[in-house]
Image (cartoon, rainbow over the protein chains, first blue to last red):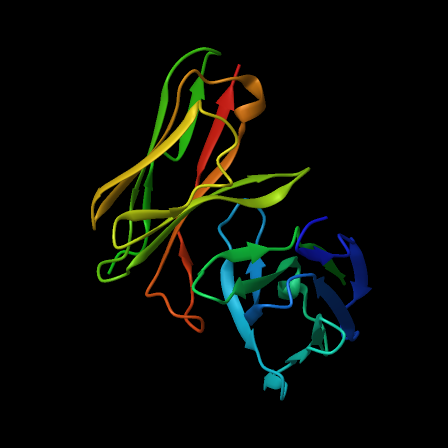
Length: 111
Length: 114
């Protein structure tokens, strides 16, 4: 079983919609989490970090639930430019610095 | 800084040939990662280095794969001999380290083995 699991989608949503992605992780020792964005045929780039208290960056909100071992990303008022694949990432603790990526969730925002 | 630089961007080779992928990390970053991305398996960590020392190579699929980091500014991933199932996009990434810093990716090398 992969350590970080995501629904691969695709999610096809109209412009202006709100969309939410979830990601579950199996390694309870994972200490830090992130959401990365990857455009078609490009490299992944950091979107935002994820904190237990939740964090918001404009239309994007990320949340971590350690008790249930899942991470979420909420995108409000979707734009065409949000179309991409969203990857959740966990970093193992305990002396290791291994970034483990989920397979990604593909989002298509439709006009 | 120009970011993480990988070469070549594209590589087409025949089965059985040796392939060498190259990476120059961002100056000052202590961690370097090699990933492979395919549609079926997503992004898989192959190996990572800390201060030029390989820390975890458990993701390297077979003995045909080897990676080196002779100095802080250069790393190679070698496949010998290559096979068609090695076809994928190979990414190099670097990071300052610690648990809350960003990993920066190169543009990747698209490898096709025919």
